[in-house]
Image (cartoon, rainbow, N blue to C red; front, top):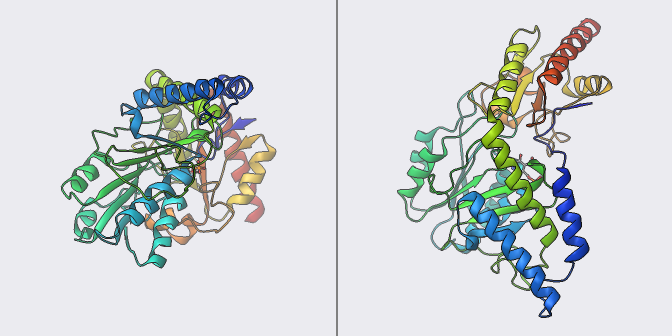
Length: 379
Ligand SMILES: Cc1ncc(COP(=O)(O)O)c(C=O)c1O
């Protein structure tokens, strides 16, 4: 089996699973309990927070453990909107966000907020001039993703951060779920106020993640209760999950430091191989994130190709896994100005540090023969 669906989710690392098991077996107490066992678990949680902060170059007080990307994005966007609505009710986001940002922003329209959705160019890059022009006295939040989950476009975070910083009233949220461990995420340098990460995209576990909240930024909590996670996320902590997340974070950052070249060389191999193939239109560029390559095969329904490739032992997706069962047309490709034909026939493949050149070669051979065969059948 050749697994090329790593942006949907990754295989958990064996040592991450081991950490999760060990903590659950030995330290299953509640960190809020006042007995010694509770205290030991609390220490473990504090250590995990400190290590996460160190790895991300931020303060431990700025780390909120979450259940993943969807929760982090909701916590950040709704949290800012509800907490700071007296300052203004205008939010800016982009047309290529993941639904966990896009739909969250739009949901606030029901509460009287106005949302500006910024356009992107043909490569999925946000129009920075449009961002400047969209800012008003009412703007309280700009939420822009770091790496797009469908085509891998990388946004100019530092440039956007600079623009937002010039407006003291505006908070800057970044969905960095697809960026983490693949390209550098400069939280401080890009003046980011809130940054979302997810565990299961970095060989960690589903149901784990982290939201960075800059010291001094206040949020209206989505959950009230016992006041855990600095009062922002009440509920008994998933200490084993948090420890496992930090282990996954450490491992993926090590891979990024040591094996980034490998990911780029696989990307090059894929882009060159696809460019030579008939019937294939490539939607990603070499400037995009190294682990995501997106292409369309006009005239062939993506699900037909995906099932045919699965039969040959190759696993990949249409658009993003979270929305791939919903609509035929990709909102992201449409926003990039692609034709209906291209926007309805997209396939995403996403690699990992474990993907080999031999796997890519085999994938390209199988793709070529499968597309040729399907084109023959479909005329
Ligand atoms: C860019 C982006 N943001 C958010 C999410 C949601 O993350 P999670 O599955 O951890 O809720 C995803 C998942 O595909 C994603 O790719």
